[in-house]
Image (tube, rainbow, N blue to C red; front, side, top):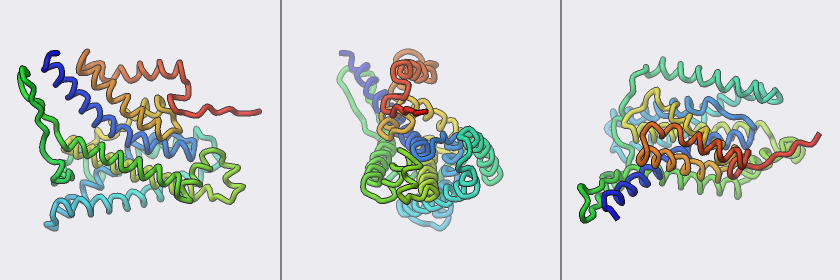
Length: 313
């Protein structure tokens, strides 16, 4: 086998895994909201944008105080989580809670309007020019590149180790979410609410608490995704919501209400994009996922892992 083709396959696969982890992280936030509220959050990309800029601001402050980058990253990420919990709680309390009981289309339209409001707030606070992070959030152990050499290849293959950060973050978050949903009282309450809101209320579960928790968690996931995109692209800017749009085919492919579907869909879409771009033509990168999506929907309309819902009348 041609060693150059082997190295190309390894490069594309590594890139696809890294992109897939990022898409899965974004999709997890969308799935969480849909599982609990039946709403597709069209403001998720703007939550990511806000989280990216808040993370940038926190890193800038810690850098200005002369704090060590590793410690500064830990402090900034912790503060970002707290900030996004507050943002998610405020959005749920002030914007979405008054809409409980209203038609789903009304809530969806509100999330579309919310995306414009957040975008305007970010523009007023930080401007429209992309801002580079003051320092890398990648731990020193993951900094650098792996070099793979093969006899007969024109040049060695260099793989950025920082891409592993995204995969590690997603693995940790998925494990934490699985434990939360299976072991914690609030996780079980969220699952019950997702299955049947009326039955959950009859069992004494507070739908308002579940909704508040859901929006806080999805805001945190979006904020972390925004900061990771800033790290991978060397800057936070207005193109972050565009990355968020790539997650919509993921959740439809995997199933709108399935965490496992978000993971599998994220990696599947990213691998399709990467292989189509690398082996056929770069212009197919944005087309192939939708072709695959149409094929899957014709076979399984509820996605690969989505639950078929039957409404009795």
